[in-house]
Amino acid sequence: MTGSFPSGYPRPSAERALLDRRIILLSGRIDHQRASDAAATMMTLDALGDDPVELRLNADSDSLDVAFALIDTIDVLGVHVTATVASTVGGTMAGVLAVCSHRRIGTLGRIHLREPTADLAGPATDLHRRATELETRVGDFVRRLAEAIGQPFEHVEADLRLGRHLTAETGLGYGIVDEIVRP
Image 1 (cartoon, rainbow, N blue to C red):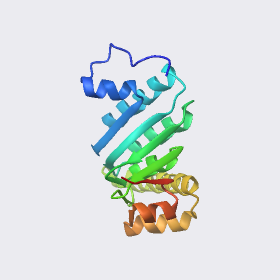
Image 2 (image 1 turned 120 degrees about the horizontal axis):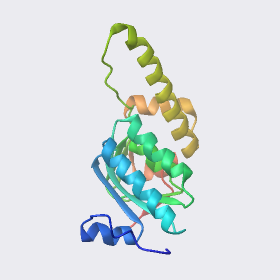
Image 3 (image 1 turned 45 degrees about the horizontal axis):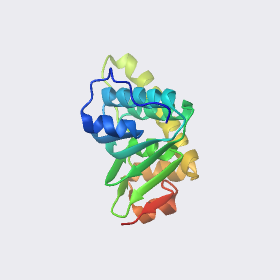
């Protein structure tokens, strides 16, 4: 790393110490703001040096916007992004995990595959158009996830619909993680 995280950012000292080590924690329910903050932090770390950035994930989201904000950021960075799952990753955060260059999971880690959700509201004339757009975006998400893990589109689509749960071992076999971290 060529520099530490800029001091103008008001961050707690523990978080600052992690950022100085190029580690970003994403835990709990991830909303648009938290995804935007994480994306901005990844871009800042990319600008500060060439060492990999590590995401430590214990996160959940059903939002395509959240997933694509993070996936698209990871795709354009000039550094590798690795991921470590200690506990559980769920929903569209599984796609974020999948696109990282190296993916680790603890022996007790879990991945919950499930379809993204969205609230559709508004005039009836707009609902069909919006539903079609959502279907296209879900297809884009499934395609990106399937490509990242080397699985057929139809297989991943079915697993998302079923809400498949993966253990560390089944996640390794599925291709969504590369390594199981053993104590």
